[in-house]
Length: 482
Image 1 (cartoon, helix red, strand yellow):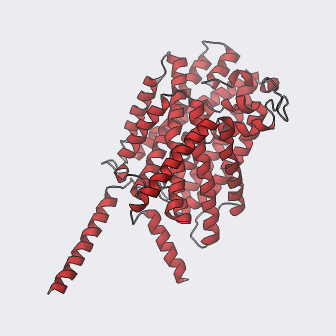
Image 2 (cartoon, helix red, strand yellow):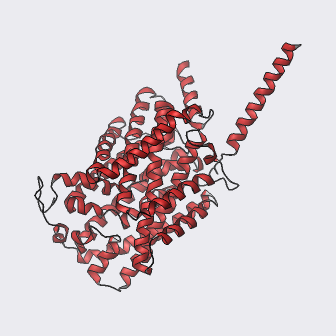
Image 3 (cartoon, helix red, strand yellow):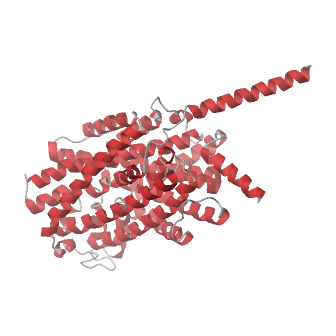
């Protein structure tokens, strides 16, 4: 009799556990099929387009035009190789974790956590830098900037994201299209005034290899890398929309590669024409370089400068808006798996992770109060480049250890392509240290704090049954049967 009761108790306990498990994931569901490949291209461009309007020009101060140009070409190659590799991984594992999911499958819970938190540092800090640039543009246009602008940005755009992914990304797509119009107007306006001599008007230093082309010498190329990365930073976030994408096997590669090609074209055109028309020295410290370039060429109070200034806000807003999406999905995936507090992955009636939107927004607003956009870029780049190293290692590991995994899209060059991105990413990790060691170490300290949280707490509270874990278990079982 007692044995029968024990069995019944075990069955009831198992049913309760299954019900609790089901309820846990039921409260953490995203809206599937909300995003097509065109919206994904728009998302990739939106993540990054603010880098065309502000931030990149600080690289002119670090390496001169020649140093920034070489850095931009090298970084573009790095990102293209990385996007090809990530396109393959995203079709293999289409979950909201993105790079975290790839590393979790390749290297287990610790590898996933290290990658996911590196990405989180990038996405949580980048909006703060963009808010500072939005403030500079608003100051130029309306005479109002500073904390009030930062606060309004966070409140409005977090609010829109709380309404749902499909609605948010459609609004983002329109804002991004408007920003692209502003870039086209700027490019066309600069062409008649291009003068190659303006590219080399920064004073030559006495550093090794210094010349008119490389006024800060060879070291300037390396120091310009973090700001060249700002031309492309966060495009790798497209796979974060995997669980909300239509036909992810086709739409994710199209979104990643299509947006990368568009961004590379804009980066090179703006670098050539902006500095070539207005002068590299005139733009190297500007908070609103495109507007200042137009003012230098056409004078103050012209419709062109006012138009690009006003519409240029759309570019900054597009990136700010879309990276809120990115950090919320990264936090959602990490929280759902138990790496971060589980409350952060709860979703509201619109299937959006509301706490994953709000909490990082508060932190980002506080960071933006520093007003140091260039230094916030360095902190974001630290997290980004570290995650790139880990993601490319994940690609290589999965290629070698699990070559038979289904891959609807395969990257040209395979391991060779990923290795190029890996080597360049490793170099880029160190580049930020050259610019400002103190800021680099601050970002490293944040990363160490995340690691300690995992070692002492979250590794003991991980959740079973996440998409990443289920994928890893299923594939391991399949390989054991072979």
